[in-house]
Length: 128
Image (cartoon, rainbow, N blue to C red; front, side):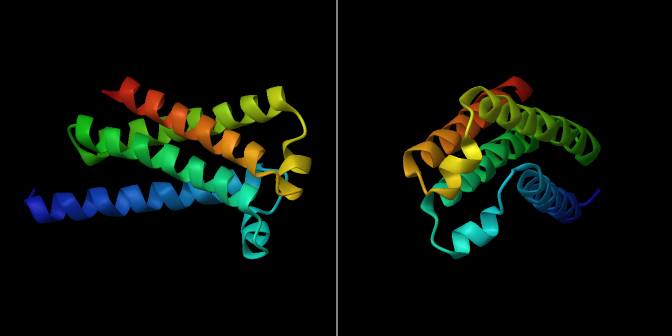
């Protein structure tokens, strides 16, 4: 396969996976991140931003450590499930995430974002 085609396939898959993650993540949270962010809610932005960065770290690792686009897709999709499970476990353990995010508690939003980034780094390292 020509290198440019390989690049374009990987780029398109990575963008698609990130979009699917965004949609699934915002669907599974008990609040509307996009609406809250449009209203200036920094806690929602920190939480969602951390989730996107965390998953992007995993995508980057999967891109670097897989042989072809099928293997990349499989690892990245599996990592997406892990990332979302980690969010579900963290918010369950911390309780009150909906109230804290909607109240614009930036400390709580930052904590959720940091947890997502941490899981993304660990998740990405496990792929290597």
